[in-house]
Amino acid sequence: MNDSELEKLLTGICRRKTPELPSSFAGNVLREIRLRKSHAAESHSWFAELLHAWLRPQTVALAFSIAIAVGAVAPLTMSFAESSQAAVRGLDLNVFSSMAPNAPSGLLAKIP
Image 1 (spheres, rainbow, N blue to C red):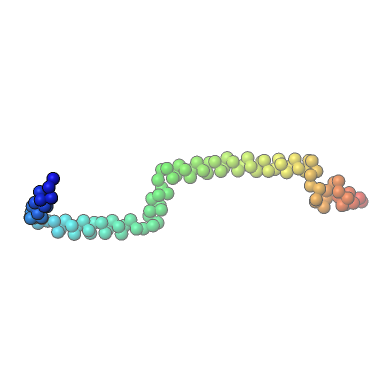
Image 2: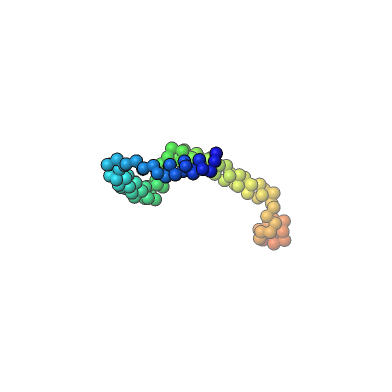
């Protein structure tokens, strides 16, 4: 394409008249602005957004499953801790305590 042809097309486009806007255009624009402002004012409540996020079914299901998992794991870890303490007491591995059965201080504490 020649530069002169491109120049003619561009000047033809520039000379076109812009179409007339409908008579209700300004009213529609102002209505849309009012609607968006009112919607923006309603959606800026952080508490409402947080509540909406927490009440989604996915979030409720996740919280419920975490609660069930913690409830199931907590007794297991507590029973494991109790059994390990019982095993340590049974093996007399507390040699640094004041009442250790094999330490001299423990033997002296048992003498009447």
